[in-house]
Length: 304
Image (cartoon, helix red, strand yellow):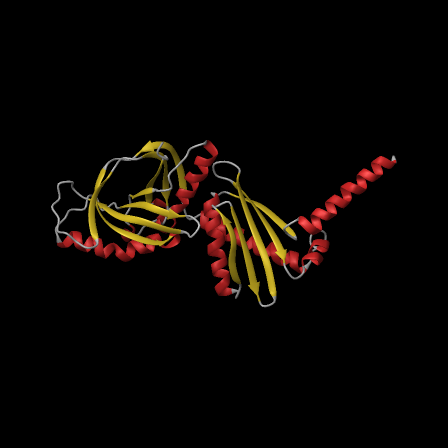
């Protein structure tokens, strides 16, 4: 073999070893595909780790979060300290590729030497752990359906509303908690609710802190006379132009349609203002099959 070629191979090998042992962020990497938006997966990760914190005595701290595409966590349990780096990349309008990089802060070198080649305890435990997350996520996804409807517009509506704030995954619970406040006011003042099909109007969405401010609204006749109240207000919601989706499922997770619209917009070059408007077309108090509960959602285009 030519000496130049030998030296080239040595340089390539040394470069690879230097990257693998000194630069590469993880000891072991697991990759899988799932039929969900990046935001749905991101929410699933945070909810799954919250459950594991309670049931497995694992403590998770978010070290870094970039929109809904990347989450880096530190997990502690006894003497164990592991870093999990979740990287989500959209493949198409419905499919996402998930790459999980795992690093054991106390046994990193040993794991790098063994995990890719031998079925070690570390490797087996991590595969089982990520597999359990994937199965749980797929079960969750089976509980709702989303249809992207494309560009569209909403109608002007006059509403009575109450302004609320909550963490994202508790927005439906917060609505139910305050439902008696606004409905009670409307009943006491004999104000007619049109169809009992409320709206949820997002006024601010802090994606990093997972907090939303929103108006819980009921459509009423525009010429309604009302008594001033410290909680219940009245206004017209102007027509919106944006991307629309139809969500079928429990209202607790209607934000999964928001994430689908954001991924769709990113892939197709739309710029959206992250202030979704939801219109609930079924009354959850009537029960029934949740997959038949329909919600119309629009996220407006960014103003030019």
